[in-house]
Image (cartoon, rainbow, N blue to C red; front, side, top):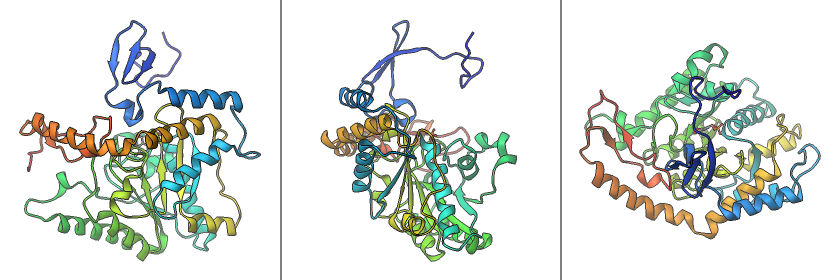
Length: 378
Ligand SMILES: Cc1ncc(COP(=O)(O)O)c(C=O)c1O
């Protein structure tokens, strides 16, 4: 008998009694290799001494201060770090408690940006099929994970969705990558025009798809072309890096590979690497400036936002990543992992695509298994 509502109501999972490094131990002493770092979370492994020390020190100093009345040195320092390493003028950081919260904040900030800019008719977000932005109602509405959406569909706001950038599945035999990418951009533009450009707030996409598609990187030039479309129609580009950000692709922000600056970026998972619940929204100068010069406030907030212990954990994680040169290690080990995966699985009937091994750090979510009824093209 359990009083906890577990994910599976018919099954109580093993009790995780302790965890260290790559392993989780249950209360019977059985050891589990946490090869996926949870759901792409524990990028430093468990019980990293530097992160634990930073959390302990912060708890001693100040475990909580409400953000309506106070800021904290550690939250400021984390924001400085994230902004300093972010592409372009993504200089403003809103700290929340997870990925879904970060995405909700992105939706609301984007909407308020247009309301304060005298365009209150902009009310539509365009998303992509086979995508995931979180389980809260706003995030679920934009995401394209049909299984997660089906029960709640009547509660969700309408959001048109276009095809994901999924070359392995969708590029036609004989079609060039450039033509395939151009087709996606044409579809997005057609969607903007059909919706009415004056009604569109922005386009939301995971830079590298995670939860709903394996590890699916964009084709070369895709995000540059998306950025150009957003600029043409005065929309915001919202990049969801909850899963792929914070080093997982070898750069701190996955979008750095594409040389593009989104207007808003969401973070979670690897930001705090599982040591504390934390997510973040990054915003460009012009977005925050409009609110600062307008109403003076972002009409949003949570009791636990900017939590100092969560910020201390995330800051320590980021400092370890930098100090131990882990971004470089991602690229080197990713290359090794890719080679080994090819050696092990090329020609395997259930493995179709090993495209994104380099997008992998300690996690092993890199080989997309091919479902039964799809023949392999390459
Ligand atoms: C791309 C992406 N966005 C948002 C989320 C939601 O994050 P959270 O589960 O922390 O709310 C996830 C979680 O898997 C995700 O992969």
